[in-house]
Image 1: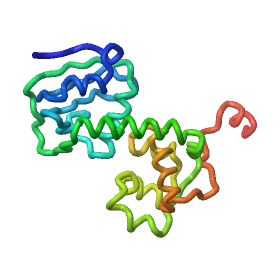
Image 2: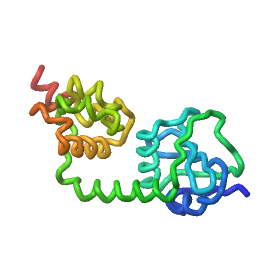
Image 3: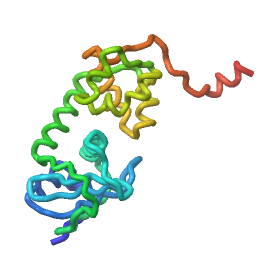
Image 4: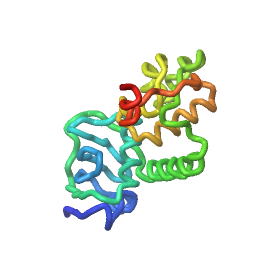
Length: 198
């Protein structure tokens, strides 16, 4: 039996709990600042999270699920029995993923006052390379952080929510794997910047 509706009446965390023992495809669209997303389910598990017809890696899949859980607008349809055509599998427990994302949201709220400025520039420390295998975000961001990058630039380059990137950098800084350079990334000059420059 197909199921459809909108996220304002049935948020994603409730929807996933409702569909926890089903097999099929959950299509979500009409999302603000996010392309249509497909979540493939089997009983108790998330098989894959896809955007633009391609499966997302674990880091991006988690970021997308977190954004979808916060979303309160968007349409969805569940199509029973549908399976992904690709072989990529996350094979995540729905219960554990929801708990992990809700814990992450709580941490974001708790640490928000301590998160770095979006334009503060970070670089990797000499210890970072040894920890690439255990830090998914660091592995993805490493090429940018080697040269020096801000949260804002990283969020754009990786296609991730800015606050999530700020939180990951804050956590890596506490572990001694990245450090602030003391510089701020320059933004585009506003009207007064151009006026004084002229």
